[in-house]
Amino acid sequence: MAKVLVLGGCGAMGTATTRDLAETSDFEEITVADVNLDAATKLCNELGGGRLKPLAVDVTDKAALITLFAKFDVVINCTSYKFGLAITEAAIEARKPMLDLGGLYNTPLQLEMTDKAEAAGVTIVLGCGATPGVTNLMAKRGSTHMDQVDEIHVAFATYRAIAPSPGLLDTVMDEFSPGIKRFYYENGEFLDVPPLTGAKQIRFSEPVGETTAYFVPHSETRTLPRFIPGVKRVDVRGCWRPETMQMLQMFKDLELLDHESAGGGQEAPKAYLRQYFLSREWARTDDKEWAFLLNVEVEGRKGNATVKATYNLSHPPKSEWGTSCTARVTGIPASIGAQLIAKGQAVRPGVISCEAAFEPMAFFKELEKRKIFVHEEVITRETL
Image 1 (cartoon, one colour):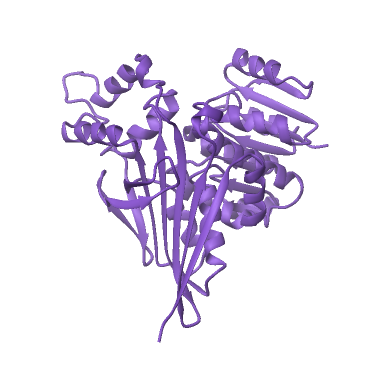
Image 2 (tube, rainbow, N blue to C red):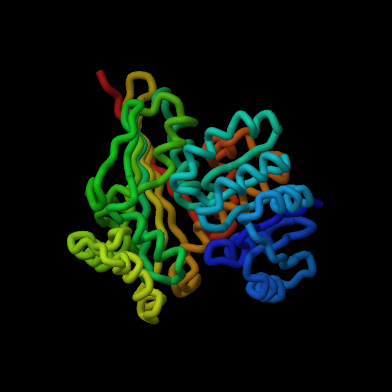
């Protein structure tokens, strides 16, 4: 009879989390907390059931958050990564387990809080979404087939309109902006790389199939080497539709993804582009197929053999899911994670990520109940 608090629970990603909690969980109370009380109230009324409650919240007020968190058994943070550090600190001080959807550059700073979380006996799970999140569990599952993990290659393909929401537009622009640092992990070092580099052909599930993905700034590079000992290389690549990638390449070449203005008080080109896309209906939706797919390759050794484990995610087509694939594949894992924590199934206290918190196959079975499937292929080759 636990109570769960969903911060940003009526946002683009949080709505999917809240909806899944309403449909699948046995929480006594599901509180949807957001700065926009009207939107939270509307979602609660839509989902019904009596146990959903809207709440206005200011996530920048840390003291108020600590008081609020004390009333709940699990906290899910679906807000922007901009608020992640204060929310994490508040959860630790309130001694309440918390999950978030991933925080880009917050991750190293959050990981530094692990001693405080352990002392408080509280579990903080970082990046319990799609990527990071499901990808981490794919990597963990792959590691179980090996004595030694050498390399982990993470990739995603996002096929959708460029700006279904402000947050999703920010994501695609940040992934390939020169002002955002991106790197991969190799032999104990984090190596910086420019945007739109590291091109690699990757075969995703249909309807995407084989396409080219590029290095992106994701937190798997921070957590997988920490929680899967001995791995020598971790990198993350991503891509959008080919026409979107061509557009981003052009924007980059013309310096239109820059954060800073050219001087003289002019608006930064990236800010102008953002405003432009958000004002265009064609940038928000279209009639093409939508998909959000994941691919993880884990390479290593078992005895005298080399092992390669490959994981691909698939989900229902647009005819069934409409344009909700990004929200569902991202938001549903947070709901599953919160339910597992409420049942005492997180592995240990501290600031951890999904590969250290949950058993992969049990998590994948929960995804299957929501028509999200993880496909595994393991190839073993004996060596002399």
